Image (cartoon, rainbow, N blue to C red):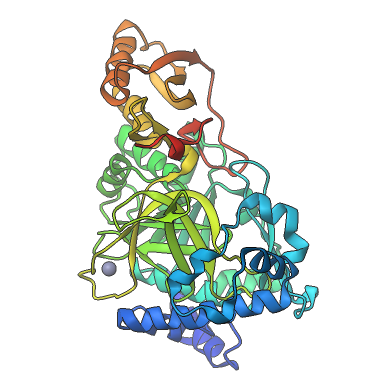
Length: 458
Ligand SMILES: [Zn+2]
């Protein structure tokens, strides 16, 4: 029985909420209300916050003062959200070259909170957040966790492959927090082996976390292990939240079937925390539009709802180091639909994941590298791991780790699949490897594109 839960729920957390409200709960009530506001009220709130951010950035961040002047952009003339399109896109390289000039000169450096990305594609990105914006992020995360039935006083599992998330400072206060608040059973999935999978299952059985918050591929591998080992007596959580990696339909099916609970997909990144999250209706992801402004663009032109493009995000609260029109290397689309759950936050779909995870056919259509790789692993005999590398618009390298079951039949199935998905003009070669390691970020990359897939779309 979980004895900590009632202590945390009825004593510790109410005390924290009382304590002058300068805690993690500071913005929770506001965030809870925002999800049911009329759409035009959310737009008005975004516009107000956006204008304040733009004016602040010009007045206090040398980088933006320069950038706005060069583009002939005046924050005072902004009257609609669309006006922001006159600000040039911000890239990761821009941040790496201009980091110090992006910091707000009116906020002492020591008041900023440092953070960095895991660097799954290229070098890690170091950046800063204003302390207050951290509380906004926490409130957002709690709000989205609640959609999956996870409360801060519940014991959850973090099935996570990124070491930085796991090696948190171990001060007395940290330990106290972990005991009563943000209670997490942490599984380090940066290196997954069969022995590790057995260990994970055993630990989850013992700790019985109510929800698994997980890297999609890691929790999928755990589910698949349970299924293949024919286990029947294992812990079933009440929900699984997947994030950080592409979740394919096949993976969702396996996870839901094995754990007998719904999967709530989530999209976020270190730079912004939770960006969008699935609710209990599971028909797309609600954008955290009260704290972020999300655009979908292709060649800097806005995409229509339902049209696939690059995700560009503006943080409405991080005044310490403003992120204005930051292009995350991910693909997604806006959805023009209302949700049956009653929440009014606008919706999007992330479709498949990172730009470099997409493959294109010589004819210019998109193939999800993740879906393709899972397809190979699940159906072709003898493939234990696979990674697809696109080196040119008509060239693929199939990196395969295989066992003794791999033979002529497997090769024929690969040939048939390549023709089916990529057409007659795709050339490919098979490169046999011992294993495919995870990236420094702990993520497993299903596919790598060495070309810009967006440039080849038709
Ligand atoms: Zn909904």
